[in-house]
Image (cartoon, rainbow, N blue to C red; front, side, top):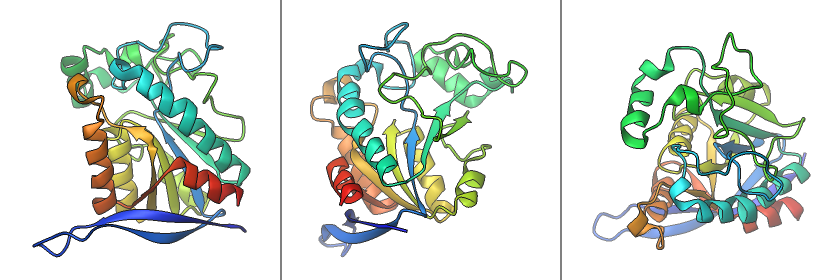
Length: 255
């Protein structure tokens, strides 16, 4: 057993007349009960070694701000993931998918269609799955870049809702591994990562978001300042758990 010590930032919404604001707490992360959770970090174009179509496939991800997303994936998520592996933390991938459950009739798929002009079954189809259970196809949207593709020792769970806990095996996996704390990264901070962290907290997991390893869906006029992302980070700090930087996490893993 090893303990990773890291400063977790949170936000205090009291007293009513003037909030105390940010504070930090020293978190001790037991490597035997902590997992590194990677939510919807997929798509091509992050690496020059990627084969197939570029990342700009219509999706619920961040194609309109791909260069910013690429910087987050290459310079923050990948180094943090490598550090988690060095420290012996299990790495768990959560990916969108298209199970054969008439998903295009779901409210989620209807929302994706009207908001993003997205056909969920075509977008989430895969060519390495059991076609009796999932929609078979060759969409590049959910393929992995060489930069962040799973390794044989990692865990991989498909989801079909914003939350990675909804009708999946995620909670069972975490219980089998005796996980108590989740270090969270990925996309989008206002959608799938958001809902997954809420459900994790409701199930009594402690949350540590690496705040430079996530991004909300920013409107073009707000992208430069990342206004919505910053607001969602603050929301995490007063509603769900703690945040830290990838640099602090890497330093804790390598200490």
